[in-house]
Length: 394
Image (tube, rainbow, N blue to C red; front, side, top):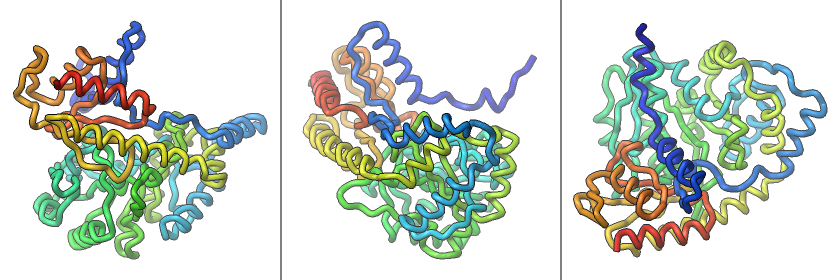
């Protein structure tokens, strides 16, 4: 019996593989410091927890509309207007089971077999696989460290063919921490309009941004680009609600209807209790976000300074999210402590075995010259973990 060829072609997540290996070592009593986390190490704020408990007590545990409850859609519309200068109606909002599900819905709604979707490298590990799942083709555009890992006009134009359907834009970016400014977004918008392309704008890290940097949604640059943009967002990162699984899209009516219809057959509605918790997250006090953001900024500053003081390693200072991409080109090809370091996977395996430090190889993000560290862990862990990495390289 032959099983699904499509399923067999989907790569497993390198991030999850390393994290699972590190967890197994921890379970065996080994003192492992993990820099693999893709989620805040803070607990969900108490007011949000209480809203979920209250929803259960009120019996708000049944099906909702497939695309989510009206109250949450209205709250999202208000948020987008106030914070992002974007006007949407509730009918243009689709609430899903996390931002990853929202991206999958968006790709399903717009892609036909053979369509091409442009993806920046380094990329979030799931982008290429989600594109392949809808029978589309990921087209990779290599971004450069000297350009702060951003698309350039030339690189973007060179990637466009008659089959191009969409451009993935992720700002603030996972894994690089890159934040696109208005000038960057303007040329991307011009290219999208010129070539009749859709923008999938993943903005899930928008509130985790540093050094006074401003988050701008590309959809806010004018009606023409807004009409062809699918904004992706959610509560996972900003409110430390990764396990609650609530994401959402804002798009034109036609795309929203398609996504809603698809979701009604895939999953029915997103978790009802989590929707009411998300309503409190968006409408309730926002002070906890700033507490978390400031702590991340402090950790980032320490991590960047320390990495750049270690011989053989370097990094640029990320402006958003909670990751640092470390350039390892100076140590590739070397033998360190008996380990041949010929790739990012070699380096991460050596760090895990020798130093008991878990990092994520850049190979999983499409660029083998880097590894990714997350600073969504305690300052104590960051100090000890980076000292161990330094010790391995000395």
